[in-house]
Image (cartoon, rainbow over all chains, first blue to last red; front, side):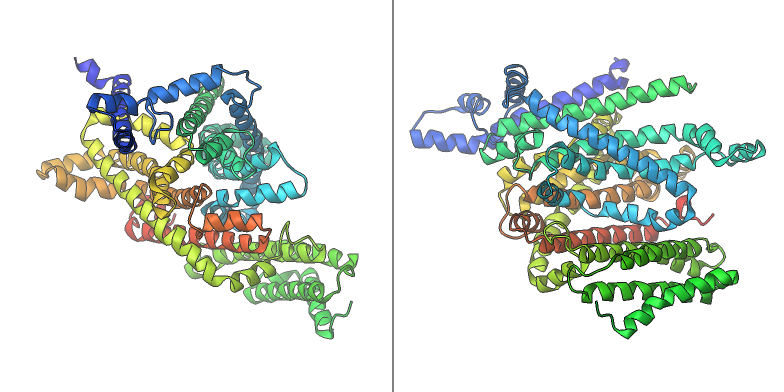
Length: 292
Length: 347
């Protein structure tokens, strides 16, 4: 039985199963107040098993049970045409597209900044502290501002959200790449010098390849926060489409199940993005001859 | 355009400075020369600001922008020679210069922002000038203080404290059970990649509109980074050190308190620093989903609706300031508690 205790798959499954059990219990506990109140008003006879059954099948529960969320997800992902406003695929795609555009913008900005910081000493001294300080500012608080102001000058739709995502995700990339571009062994740098390599040759042949592990590590962090940026960016813009809009309308109309299913979809998207990054990282590393 | 004679004289100064620097290359080598050139360029900036402010609308000529572009170039040079100063030799000047250069850069950004918004008469709704934001800040100090109390002192601090402490406690407990460790660590890593801010509407539904719901969001957001970092930190202790403690016949608690937790401190502080920004974000975003009529998130979302953009920017300034100070405090504590760590040693 020892393999059971040492296998990480089994431990993860056990923790997940435990969480699910707790969840079902919590659903009963949190929904019971409302239900008992209802029973008393309607003078319905009730016992514990009826309470449990009802609390897992409420229409607007305080805490929905996992299977309710799954059913709602199934309904809203497969039940409608993907162009329908009710389809989660539609809302998910809106969010994913601005996430990806924002991520691309942030990545380009972050890498350019890092290259500048590594090569220009004035930039290193003057900009780097501000990049760090810029992240102690709650950028997401400015999100509604950015959306409204950009909307006022006629930029609407995908771009404002993407800008917020880009603002959030340029930081880990810039910091990671500064570290990565400075990571070559001094010996290797000296070797490049003895070859009389120019700055750009050193960059393409030594600094850039050495920084790939750092690049992918920061890509993984920033794609996840890019998604957060896109979701929050959807909150103030009147909330027409996107997962953030689903969250907002869900909270206006008390549709808890809808909120939870939007959250689950967001988590699945985040998880698969990070996974995709890992796959790409492994591919690239293999091509570069790194032994796993 | 009526500039006073003073403005004209001040505007002339950077030209003299630049000429001095050009014709006598040695001027910026020594410290006094550097300081003089910096002051001279700064006076030029003041002069242009003065003239732009006093000019009647629509009368600023293109000449002043040419001058501003040259000034910006000069400032870049100034930052350049300051940042080339050898900072390793003297610790005190090193600290001063490392503060000075970013301050100059920030000052330059503010200066250009003020110049451009005033000079080109950018509508206030789009981007108010820093001076107007300052005025709004001073006028609504009381309101901003109430917002700060509601969002930062109540929601953020309470949530931050609870989230971080529970993260550490759960990490210590989980660390005792290797089985849980293998199950929780990957899930915790996954959870820190999830958009946890999304639970904000649910928390507002559960805990009501007041600060408790915001604190709950903050707890959810800060818990996982703390858990994962503390777990990694607890694992980071050297085998040798543990063996040494073992040979001293130390029990579990002694090992934990004397070796493993101190070794985990850098990781814990790392998580604290990450969490300080997450906490503010969580509280402010949660306020978008419903609040009593006070709080920074509420202020931002309502004042933007009333197009009082200067108040919004003042609120953002408060958020930025409190976030940075919080971070700075944690960084200071980190220095105090983990000064022994190799990453702080001067190379």
